[in-house]
Length: 75
Image (cartoon, rainbow, N blue to C red; front, side, top):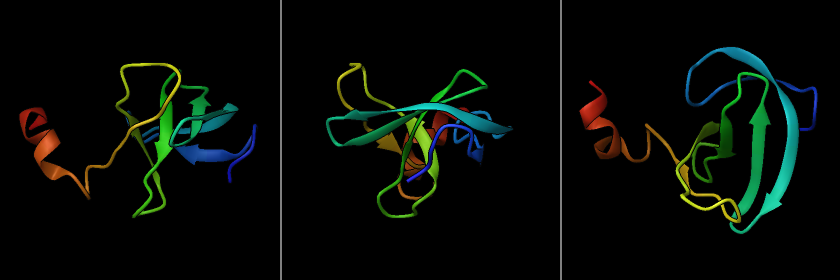
């Protein structure tokens, strides 16, 4: 598990950044980063990815590798 201050690459913007703080949520841990994005850990790839949850209480990791169909509009 990542801790506050850990260097990471944001799963949303791709910037090198750091973890500001972590929060235990339903379905796992949310990682709030200094780039101001909230990420979650992909349970398959074990990398930071976008948290696609619409509620603050839980996380919903959305991974570009595991769910490429969700990103088809981005290209």
